[in-house]
Picture 1 (spheres, rainbow, N blue to C red):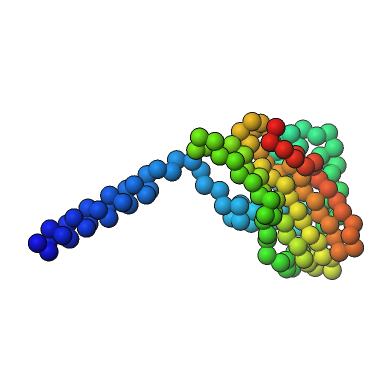
Picture 2: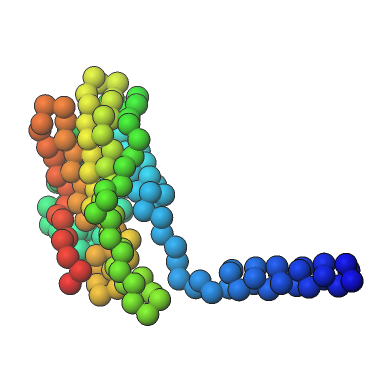
Length: 166
């Protein structure tokens, strides 16, 4: 009797595990994880003056801008020194996701990093606008805008905010 109850319990647990793990076929995005990854990548490109690396992060629409190379160069000149410290990376609560028929069709995040200190004695805040998914227009997937502000309130903007799901 005890053996039969144990067998039924094991089969029930196995059945529940199979049901719980086999139903999710769409990608999972964690805005905090993605925001951290993007922000750290941007910080690395800025402190190492890597214009091509930074450019590769932008969406196709932004990369097609005739002024993007100049904007990136201005940002690399604006951001002085190597990073010594920064406050934790935060993803804005305005992060948005839209799902239709079980598929993500729109996913926007706006990560920012504040109190970025460099060995040049500068302090910066960096805000980013990024589409992780944009089913209507794949050319919008990627970073669309990076805003860098220093401690004096001066700003440098690279790209342009793509503000809607259209």
